[in-house]
Image (cartoon, rainbow, N blue to C red):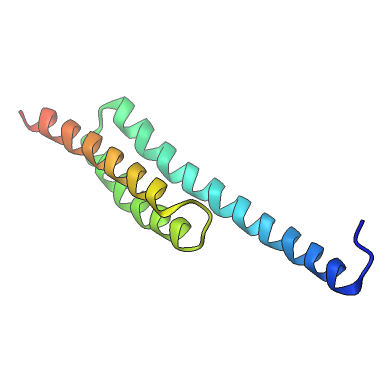
Amino acid sequence: MANTTSAKKATRKIARRTAVNKARRSRVRTYVRQVEEALAAGDAVKAKEAFSAAEPELARAASKGVMHANTASRKVSRLAARVKALSASANA
């Protein structure tokens, strides 16, 4: 347990930041899940819309330090490839 005033304040700050980061992480997962569901359903239009909403969320999470920048970039890249593949197969 924190004893000094500064340690108590630090504990409060950490708790607030943890709550914010948890909400951000959850938000990112929701957007990514929407893309995944559209891909699974085979709906190219819906997948493209969901992807354009998910991409900035992933970038924001990376910029805020909720996830590593390379992780966000990798997720965007893999989702983009899958959306592109679905669009190509839908057009073919």
